Length: 199
Image 1 (cartoon, rainbow, N blue to C red):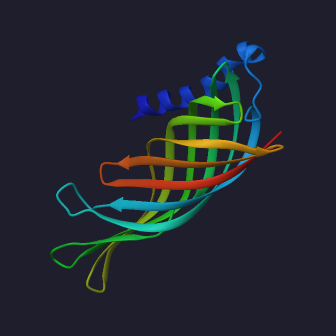
Image 2: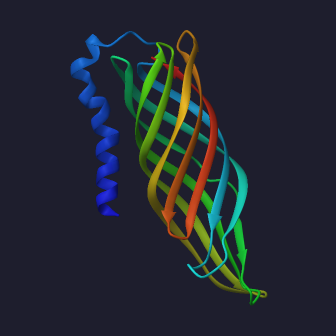
């Protein structure tokens, strides 16, 4: 996991930095530069108590704020982004013996890099890869007895892709899908729409 974290962090930070040397030769695009924005996501949190236990997912709504930097490289756009937001809704798995295992997602933080093709100067189709952290409270109960309740920070690789389009002035909109695998027993899918403001 340490190697994965180092790789994801390196990609997220190195892409925009490596681009500075050739930015002056890139085709002008309104999608370049610093951006801040917000995303609204439809989430699906999948959990199970162990590898042998059944898996269950719970749909929810999450909001995420992001800030990043993008640089054009000819027909390509590369950049890095950090995000902070909510995690969605609690998912509960019920065992054959009636015991219950619940995961309540809290804050979510992610660091990622992206690279894509500028199909026109104001529109990019891109892929994203990075690392994500999800704060959770995990609770186990049997009947009316609470067996445990612990807070954990779960971390893992996140990846996906999307489309972003400039809609006028410094504003752009985007649609994106990402998948995060925090552990073998905890995963999350996000289908998001968002808007960004560039400076």
